Image 1 (cartoon, rainbow, N blue to C red):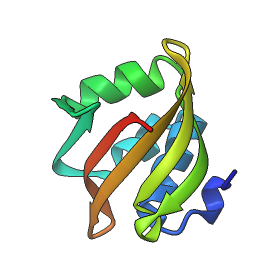
Image 2: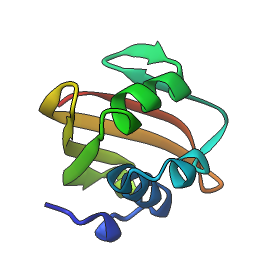
Image 3: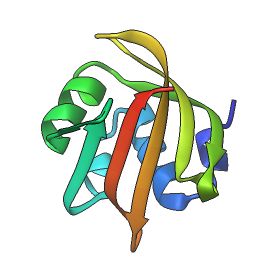
Image 4: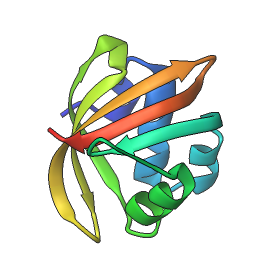
Length: 106
């Protein structure tokens, strides 16, 4: 397990930390204007998806692997809706903000 404070990319580190703390305000500061995301290859609305899959369902990440300078993660992700599953996360970061993230089963 990789502790969030040990993740290589500072923006991804802040993303994981905000999710695990249930800190919506800290999380909302991370996406760039117009940020996009996909779940299992389908584009989703970032605000709707993060509310449903992270914040209202108490999402939590346990990072097991990182690559690409910390912008690609394998995570044991759990929430109250789906339980626990191994997922892959890929982040596009520019100027300290997330412009896109993609997730899906690992």
